[in-house]
Image (cartoon, rainbow, N blue to C red; front, side):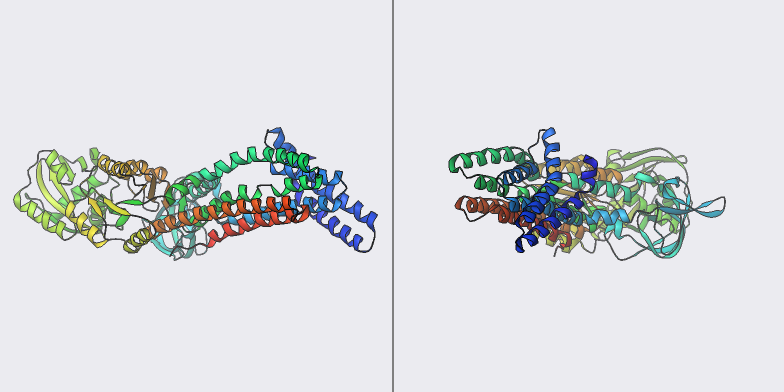
Length: 617
C-alpha cells in the first residue's frame, strides 16, 4: 500500500485538484452539500500521501514540513473548513510536483551526460567486426569507430584519423582532430572519419564514467549553509507546533493557529541552498569543469590567491626540442637516442618532447635498466653500458659533475631565449644539452586577467624550471611573484606560506609532482586532459579541456552560486516573516498563505535555475 501511494503520488495530486475544482463549481450552482462532500474527498485524497510522508519522517524521529501541513489539514477539517483543507492539500502536493520537475531540470547536465553513455561497441574478433554490449569490451580489444558512432571505452588510436566531438568530456563543442597515438575517451562522438584503437580503460575506469561519478557525488555534497539549514529544520518544525499552540492559548482562535502552522513552513528556506548548489555544479559539468561538491564551491568562492605550476598549466604542456648540443665526442642522434630511451621511464612533458624528437628522426629506442625518477631534478638510468643522468643543473651538481664554462654560457643563452635546458651527463661527464621550448597557452593571459577582476589579489607561479625562463613567462603574463628551480616539497612550502599570510589559496597543476601542493592548497585545480590520475584524484576541481578559461569560469561560477544561495535564503526568510506578520494581523488566511508559501518555493527554484545557463564574462 505504501509503495503504491509513493509510486502514484501524481495521481493523488491530480485527483485532489479535480475534486477541488468540481467542488467549487458545485458551490457556484448552490449545491452546498455536494460541494462539501467533494472538498472533503479532495482533502482526504490529497492528505493521504502527505500523511504517509509525515509518518515515515516521524518513525525516523524527524519533524518534517509534511507534519505541519497534515496537522493544518486535520485542524481545518475539524472546524468544518473544507475549502481551506482541500486547497492546502492540493497546493502542497502540486507545489511538491513542480519542485520535483524543476529540480530535475537543474540536474539536466548530469542527465544529459548519462544519456551520452554508449551502449554498444564494434570490436574486431578473429578478424571480423562484431557489435557487442559495451560491458563485454575487454582490455586489449581492437575497437572500430566510424562516422557518427560513440566512443565506448578509453584507448589509444592504432590506425586511422577522425574528428571527434569531445563536448561530453571537455565541454568543447569544436571537434578535435585525432590520429595514430592520440587518446580517445568514452562518451565522445566521432564527427567524421575512421579509426581503430586499443581498449585500455573499460567500465568504471573510463574517464566518462569517472566524470558521471564525480558529478553525482558532488551534487550530493552539501555546503555549510545547507548543513545548518538541515539541522535548523529539525528543531524549527516542533518549535512552530509549540508556537501555534501558544497562539491558540492566547487568542482562542483555532483558525488563526492553523494558519500560523501553514505559513510558518520553511519550504523555500530549506530548498533554496541545495537547488543553487545542484544548478551550479551542473553548469560546471556542462562546461567541462568538475567541481567536487558544495563545500568545494563554497571554499572556491572565498579564494583570493592563485598559484600556478608552469609546464602544462600556464604553458601548453606540448614542448618541442628546439636544439641539441652534443659534447665530448657524442653526436646529436647518438645522444638523442640514448636520452629518449632513458625518458621512457618518465611521464614528464620534457621527457616526452625528447622521445617525440627521436621518433621524428626515426631513431630506434633501446631498453634501459635501473631507472630512477628524481622528483624535481630529473632521471638516472642505465642505457646499454652507460649511466645516464638527464635533468636540471641541480641534478648535475648533486652528482658532483663539473659543467664546463662554454656549456654554461650556451645553456644561459638558450634559457634567456625562453628555452628550458635539460643537461645530459654520460658516465660522469657532460655529454650535451637539450633546449626545449613550450608555448604559453592562448587563453592564459585573459584567464588571469579575469581572475584579477573577480577578486584574486595575488597570482604566483611555481616551477622546477630555470629562473630565466620562469621570469620571462611571468613577465608576459603579469604574474606577481615567481619561484623557480623548486622541488615538490618547496612548492608545498610556498603554498603554506601564502596560507599563513592569510590568503585563501587555489593551486593549479597537472603533474605527479604537483599533487602534494594541490593537496596543501585550500582549493586544488587539476588539468584533466593532460593531467595525471594522481593530480585529478587529489584536486577539488578538474578542468577537462585543459583550458585556463575553464578555471576562471569555475571561480566566477562559484561566486555566482554562493550569491544565488544567499539571495534564496534572504528571500525565504523575508517571505516567512511577512506571512507570519500577515497572519497575526489578520491579513493572510489559510488558503492564501499556502499559495504564497508554494509560490515562494517555486521562485527560489527558478532563481537557482538561472545558474544552469550562467556564462562568465
